Length: 141
Image 1: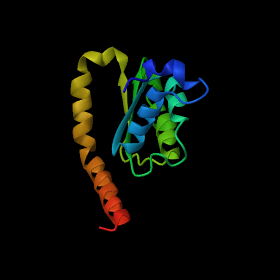
Image 2: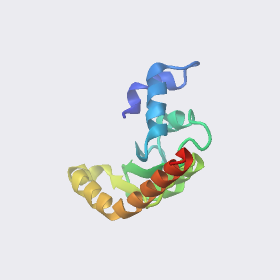
Image 3: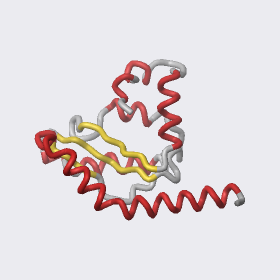
Image 4: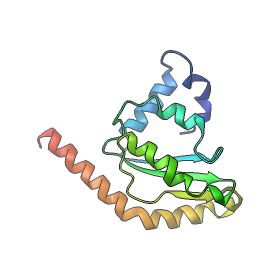
């Protein structure tokens, strides 16, 4: 989902139907790719404002994959130092290194993401399998 359309509603008082639907989609995801451009060396305030609306442990049982698009390679650690801890704080399992991608390499985006996906697929499958086992255990089946 693109949060830019929800931006004006994220800081407004009260609930907004579009924001509530987006939050529900995130809470129900088994695998969540959280992507943001870097802004001043970290993720954007728009992403932070959205994720701040989630309650503690809202992403428990979710495999989260952090991705940051950087303007400069000196921000490459931001995906691990800033975005990963935010996702873990919300209860997500972050089983793989995040992807830090240079904006200047956008012509290679599909190739880079495909290689990253191939590399991380085993860990994501393992986390997803654990989520499924836990769901079956909770349901008593």
